[in-house]
Length: 96
Image (cartoon, rainbow, N blue to C red; front, side, top):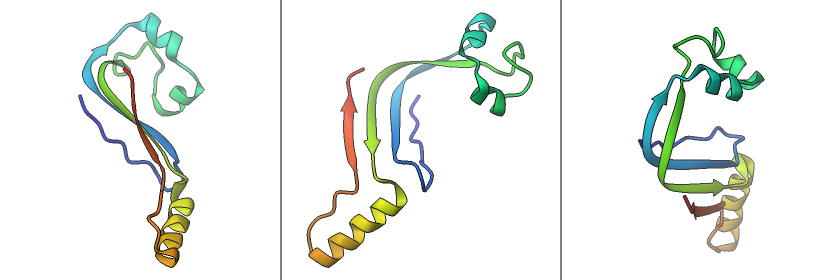
């Protein structure tokens, strides 16, 4: 499994994980993980077999931390005005 998320215009932190994924349909695990955010996006609760847990054994992970859309735009303008290379954010590889 490999996914490259695309953050929205106001997002500033996100992570990308590559690894081996499997679907887990364990009702007790789903009940432990279920919260109000999950409830807002998944219908019928943890008992519904449509709702599953995706478990990932990671091989690699990276994290990005950027100032968001406005901060990135300001860094671009500053770079053009000063001639210096902009630093729109930070990328780090994570230990998995």
